[in-house]
Image (cartoon, rainbow, N blue to C red; front, side, top):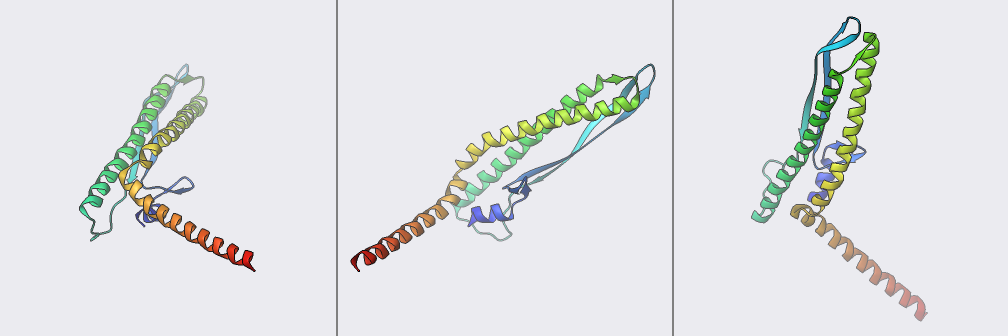
Length: 178
């Protein structure tokens, strides 16, 4: 039930739901200065980060063991999302350093090149984010809370499958005896 609640009510991420999420809204600014060539001054990339983490509904009571697993899971989710934030910040720093070295004949050309470099670094960052999620997914699947949360539905599914199998066997036996 816990796993189902988190995956149906968790934040939207990509094409589905997640246990936690980090949304980044980047912005960049600077002054284009035309001389013999156009250069950028006072260039800066900034970002607004919004982190959504799992939380229990007010008044939720948990056993000591489950509360310990929950607290550990919350810490895992926060560390994971902070990892995404670190990747974004690193990528924005790389974009900023590359952009600061640019110049062009015209400011409109430089403006296009700035957008191009930012987009290139953003795409590289997206690939790093995907690789990070893949590596973290392995850790998440072994987390004690997730193991416990998915064990119960799996056991129910196995019990249902077994009862359906027994039912099917009983039906076949009846059909064979007629």
